Length: 336
Image (cartoon, rainbow, N blue to C red; front, side, top):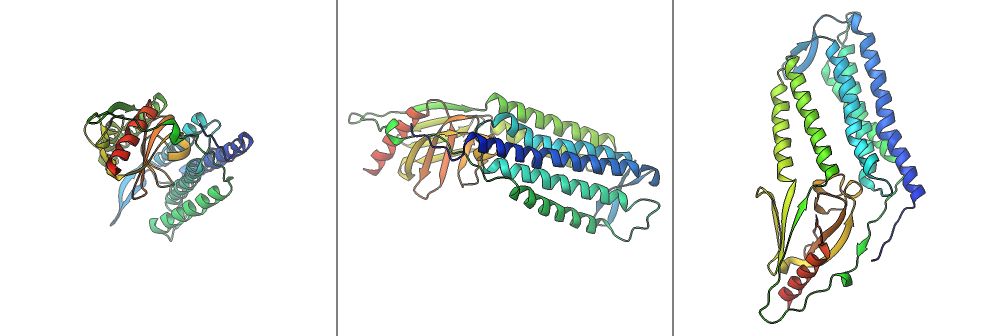
């Protein structure tokens, strides 16, 4: 096995500290300040204030305390969801996706705080606001971009490379004339991924119920989003993998999505070690920053296939070395 690492453990620790500050500490401080500011303005607000704006103006109203709770809950939940999985799962490995998630956490927190604080400020009775919700949202998205970029650049560019098994570790098989060989396996979501998905669904369900209870007419949108997320999760928990003389077939346990890569389309086959958070930003059907597509359901061994077009597909499976041997054999026979 040839293993190369482009970052030392001290570099990873330095990246983790920067990630923690940018992605979690600063967003929590921003949220605390915004929540305290909105709470301090409560006596200066009417009993009912606008909580939702439509194309024709305000169309949703509620108690001012709603903004306090929404700011506090969302302001804490978003950075926690974006950073805690990285901090728990990434110990000695790191990648560009981690850096991106911290920047997104900071930028999103800034957007929420500006939007909520601005929405409340323009409705204070002691202030004759001359601006509408449009400038508030524009300022919020400006804060998203600005702080997101700052969060990106203040973090060190640290990447640990994955360990790769050389092609010699997965030789092609010598088959007798007319002999065929096939390999079957299952790619299943690991326990950390299942826990993360379950927590995300619970938060979505709780948020939907809460929005419904406060009388916001947009609750049905959250309900549809929740159902869509549940459906997407159901399609990505387990995949059936088949390697044969035909090529590689990967199919969800419920039948969709599916991928078929013909043996004649394969340019290269490797066995790689995958760290989902560092390389793909999480588990499931993922798209890496380097252009790879993957069914990445856990940390560990994976089959990596490069097509003649240069597109790369990765699937995490047990006994990937045997699967690679069968696929290399199929690719060589199709090209001979």
